[in-house]
Length: 232
Image (spheres, rainbow, N blue to C red):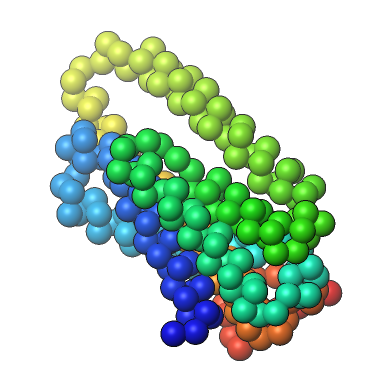
């Protein structure tokens, strides 16, 4: 088995681990509230995750592939060295995700994978090969503030619901049961467009190295044909 196959396989393993680590969050509330049976919820969530991954663009994949490590710096490496960077990055993320899943500790797959790329990339090409500005502006800041925004908005929305419906008849529960289903589908599609594309991004990074197209900035195409789309 060559390194290219191992690198792609490691990316798929990361996607699998990330799926059972984070994917359960999508259906936890709708199952916990007994609004939908587990098998049915799993089926619809899986379908929505797939639809989100293939229809909502490639922005996340593009960020992972070209905005963390500078392609021009990676171009100086041999293809097998790029494969090793991906193996170490995705492998390190897996090593972090498994024990946190085992003990039930919440953790971010984005933090794990992107930190792995930064660490492995710095060892391979030095800190000059890291797009520090893009990592800080597009990755670190959003990853730090998005949980806070989510908690604040969740608190405010829940408080508003309590004020509006706290004294309503129990039949109002049927309304929220109906709303949970499209919300779950939307959440699953959003996660699919985000989490699945992280693995897509590192796989495209491997394929770019294999095809010799690492020398300049490029974009990840929506449909991968035989060649990457250059954006020079």
